[in-house]
Image 1: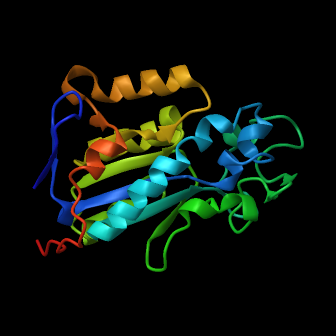
Image 2: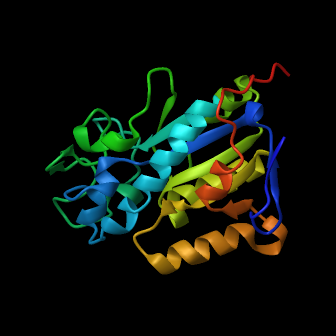
Image 3: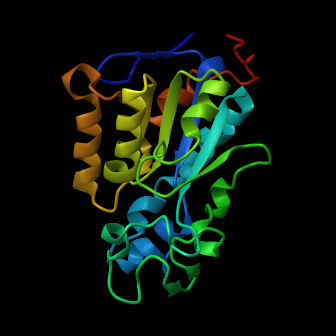
Length: 230
């Protein structure tokens, strides 16, 4: 068992063999100019600051043999899985499914829907495509984690107050113990980021724990751990 002593509200203890690194929606449509995020008037630079620390954490997690799972938010080409309440967000001609510099916005299979090059999944790393904000809604993520006997999640990605928060809440309801890495999650709005992290760790860790990636890097083993068989 490993312990992240600097985590708040209290130290976070986890077994690498039953822990997964969850990388949420680090997609071109959210992080790069011309994507859906920018079409809503957001500064994508606020999200791009997460790439460097997450690259280091991802490399360390792979070296330690942790399960790594990536998610992508997006929809079927016919948009049959995108409800009107979501489809009508954004300016006309810059909504989900509309043409953009990186292909149709947030449509599966398009260039903009895929993960940024710096964090590209390795062969064999699961990529979960999700139609909603939470990574468990209408996906096979829970079954995938259960099959691999995962009990703890190191949570990274974007955005802090939307897809990350929704996923952590869903994970908490399912019994997963989540550590959110503050420098590896990001929001277009710095205040939302700060408050979102405070909400996770509030009331004795009502949804989970919060720490910096450097605190995890300090305790991760440098050689692969044995996966649990129970």
